[in-house]
Length: 288
Image (cartoon, rainbow, N blue to C red; front, side, top):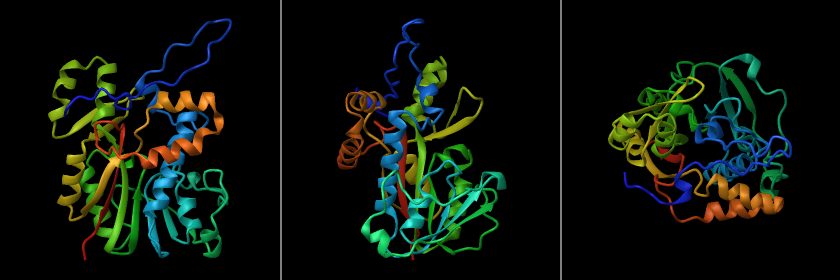
C-alpha cells in the first residue's frame, strides 16, 4: 500500500466546542470517533445521507426481493421498501425489530417515482447473519451487507459464500467493510507498531477496538479476490466517503444547510481507491 498525504486518508476528529469553565475538550481519537455512530454529529448525518444516496443508485429498477444483513442500526431498509422492494431484515433478536415503518428517508419526502410505485413490505426475521441456513438457495434478487457487518464476521469468506448461495443468478450484493486505512490508524493509536509494520502486506488484518471487539480490514484488491473466490463478479469498489470528518464538520459548522451540497460533492468525486477511505463499498453480481 502506498502512503497518502490526503487528509481523507486519516480519520480526523471533528471540531469540538470548548467549555468556558473546563476549557477545550481533549481531541477525539480515530477509534473514539468511528467506534460509535453518533447520529447527532454532523459527520454521521453526512455519512448516512451519502449511504442512502449510494443505496438509491444501487437498488434494482424493478421491484424484487432483498435480504438485508446490515443490522438494526442500518437505515437503508425503509428506502428499499419505499422503492417497491420486499425486504427481509435479519436481526439478532426479536427485541430489535423496528416498531414502525418510516415514511421519510434521510428526512426527505419520497420522490414522485416512489409515490407512483406501491411500497414493498418489510419483514423482520431473527437469525444468524453469518450462516443463512434459514433461506433456500437462489431466492433473493439482492443482498445488502452494509454497516460494516462483514468486517465483524471475521471468517468473511463463509459469509460471502452464503450471500452468493442465496442470490439468484443475476442477483447483486452491496457490501461495506472496514479498510486497511482505518485498521492502520487504530493500530497506531494503540502503539501496536510491530503489527502496524506488517499491516499493509498482511493477507488477513484483524484489528482490536477499544470496546474489546475485533474487526477485519480489507484493501480493495483483497475484497475483489474474496468475491471472485465465492463465484461473484465484482462490479465496482470505492470508498464510502472521500471527504474527511474534519472537512465535513468544518463546512457544516459554518453552514448547517450545506449537507445536500456535501453529499452531491461526495457522489461526484472521481477519486475512488482504498487509500483514502476508512470504509470500502463494493457491488458484485452472481453470474447467470
